[in-house]
Image 1 (cartoon, rainbow, N blue to C red):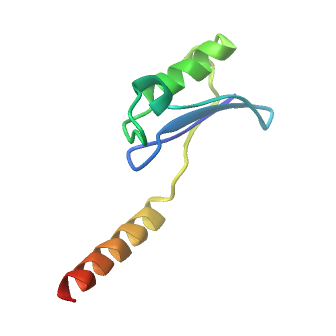
Image 2 (image 1 turned 120 degrees about the horizontal axis):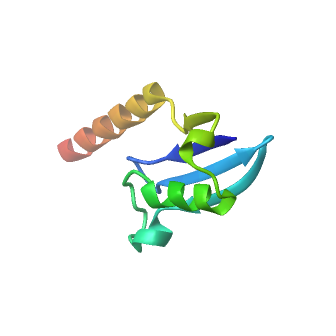
Length: 88
């Protein structure tokens, strides 16, 4: 069982996989009613675990969706673009 999650950037979500197949998935905004919620997806994770009736202890691996170096590069490019736009 693998629990994957995204968050702290845009559209937080969680998914539970078993033998490579998605068993459950949910976006955090469905529970918080906040469009594009970027909070840690606590409720989405809880939904996935509850759907399969398991605890976090029964999960074999937890994975995060993003490579932090790619995120940093994307963020720096955005800052450069904003700075250049302010000079115009």
